[in-house]
Length: 318
Image (cartoon, one colour):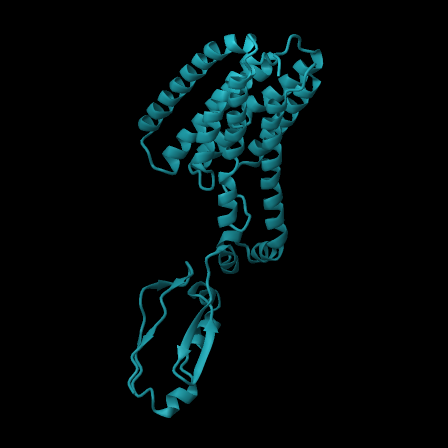
């Protein structure tokens, strides 16, 4: 893992292309957040880990003497991640703008100071052949950049694989930046395994996000077509809201000893008023048997439009 002594032209060209992508990859996401004034589905932890990743990644790139474009990448990458984090604090967590700006600025200065100290401290020993500290730094960088892409998978799980809040232009540019940067390392006289792992992790995990959303599009093609025919958005379609609710449960509603049958959740019943009416009907055998001498329905608070309905309660007398 010796430092690069010369940089081929191809490595510089490919590294420059990768740097251009990574210098602006978060700009579409930042613009998207600003226009929508919300960051739902974009995890704050993702941006925090990416900003933290810029420190060891920057140290590793400088001490390893990578081509200059790749040395610049972590600095720009970390800065844009901090800006995006500030937007999440403002739009999602409802922080005051000045408070979020002050926090992010302080973190930016702290990260820059830590990186500068590590470069000065580790470069000398590394030049003298002490390689293990840089190995540790490279491993930390790879772990952080990979961990930063894991929080969106939690958001995908909550939404049945659907991607919400992540701008596709940003994700495509980020993957392209990692791809060209990986090629730049390949074009160097000596391929750096740890540096390559960082870019490879990004490509693989972001490819998983693309794949997850494509699967969601395929699975919901019927619902999306139905929403289009009805002139409503996917999220306004009752059936779509039910499909997206991963926590819907099937419970059992008991009608004395004469009838016991499963019934859907309130959200499911709300999607079909006819089914709701049938479920609320008292079974005829019970009513005629005399076990239900006095029935009174007490409706609690509920909302059919939102899919939330508290079921009626009956006062039973033997």
